[in-house]
Length: 274
Image 1 (cartoon, rainbow, N blue to C red):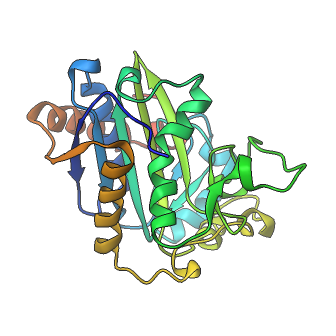
Image 2: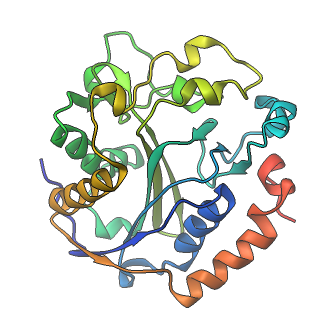
């Protein structure tokens, strides 16, 4: 089903693989620069280099991560502005979007907005021939949804997407001054076990219920998958994607955030601004 949106054009910003700090600074710069319904909504697609651990907004790094192991392996740690558990970003396509509530189909709740804004992902996975469904529709009776876990892949939200019963990727959202920010991951390879190695609690079950595109038999290149993702987004929401780049103002804000926030251990490890 297509969710009709009131905004018929979206900015599309595709960035090459960047560091975790750069990626999070760009995402927040796009959010801070957005001025409501008068602004064009934004879809951004990106990747991570090197592989990086991201913490949820309210996690304390020392409580959930083995920071000594992270340092020894030179694995960077960055903090997201969205909640949830630790994510290991490796071989994946990551998206973020910024829009006003008025620019999407009417929703009954914040939770329902996840259904609307992840609809293009469901279309994307199904276009690849996968048996994809929302967790709320596909989970066995009695499954606990929405349970908080220190490792993102260990829990399932109602509108997380499952393929043959296993979670694929994850999504998180933040609301700020009438603006919706959401980002999420589309795993090409399954790196959950690799990420779990850096957790303090390395319970094997945390990484057991997830799957990646390659494990599902998808052999498309990353470039082909990104092109398909753009097409499914445009088709699902019936919008035109306008290729764009960061504005001068967005680049300025990004630079400030990189220097004062995402480039600091104070923010990334403790969640405190300098």
